[in-house]
Length: 235
Image (cartoon, rainbow, N blue to C red; front, side):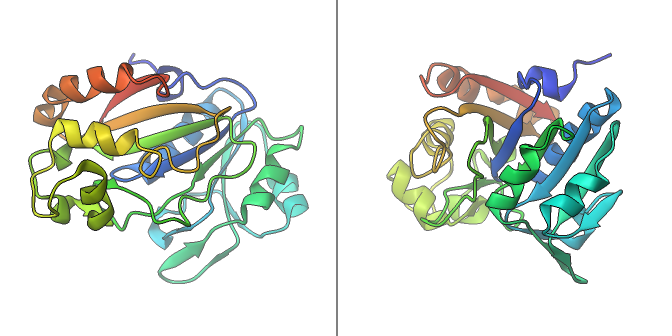
């Protein structure tokens, strides 16, 4: 049996986890929620931005009232929560609502998709992004290794910001050095990550070839003083 992703990421008890970046956030969100619930934990999974309606999992509650959310949480369940839903999108919770839910003794863990990326593979956020709730204990910075060797303006959300951070043209191919630079930059993957918050990186590998390309990126990230650990996540 392969190790659980929650263990590989070093996640403990009473966590408020914010997931940022691009290239696999929603899948990681759902997987962490399921793994914790399988161990008997009462888990809330949510977003502070917007997600596709098809990414909402069951069971679910659509409310922005902390008491309503807390009352719906049960041990052994990963409860998807959002403020509202229409045919295309779910609207996330305000960060202060997430913080209030996490403070409840009846909730063991909260996992939040705190960023949007429009299905791109790497991202540098705008100044108002990401929406990381106060009190977050761990931030998971996500990028897809499938972005390597492809033009920045093809694979990146906000490609002009990615290009500026790495000092390249938007049409340039994304290199391992570029990826490391984006993920560890204060205006990139570490934007709005408080000094007291653990920062871990999840490198998504959709193919075996992508996984083989992980070493150069992982080694450089592990040497960065702000990154606690790096996990390669096969799809």
